[in-house]
Amino acid sequence: MPRQRLDKGLVQVYTGNSKGKTTAALGQSLRAIGHGFYVCFIQFLKGGAYTGELFASQRLYPNFVFRQYGITCPYSTIIRQGEEKCHGCGECFPSKDKDSTEHERLTRMGFQAAQEAVSSGEYDLVVLDEINQAIHLGFLNTEEVVAMLDKKLPFVEVILTGRNAHPEVLERADLVTEMTPRKHPFQKGTASRRGIEY
Ligand code: ATP
Ligand code: MG
Image (cartoon, rainbow, N blue to C red):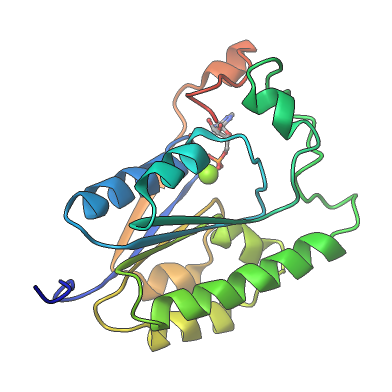
């Protein structure tokens, strides 16, 4: 049987300041995989090698390929083993006070992978997790990201996630969903939970 394709691949954006962007993209991936499609999930800025989605993706390979282009958490191993929790130390995140050269280099590698994934024909859904934030931090230009979307194969669906989505990305998108915070357990001091927040 010939490999199935989407009739028309669109561009989706999940942005906003509340929880649900990455998990919505994972839910969308699961749905596509269920129908035999191939998904490439590219995660920018985050290298938490202990997240549940990273392990789940390995069970779904080759329909689900998961790649990370962030700086690895120094406590990944013990967090993965459940002996410690993510305390939000921020070691893995870029910030204005820290040298961001390495984050930028990894982001550029991720972008190269993204360009290949949307135009190789290997994948039906390409998720660019946290790419909005990578643009916001100045690691990628909006123009090059929009150019990538314009060059994607017509049957490829692309999802761009992350806070602070650029207006030109929103303009290019066919679907935009904004996660609005109403309540978050972090406000009451609840720490990140294994299996829920990571
Ligand atoms: P998730 O991966 O759970 O779908 P997300 O991708 O929407 O979350 P990110 O911006 O990537 O959220 O943030 C990563 C982490 O920060 C998640 O664990 C999420 O629960 C948490 N978070 C999201 N929104 C808020 C908020 N408004 N206040 C505090 N923490 C938040
Ligand atoms: Mg996220």
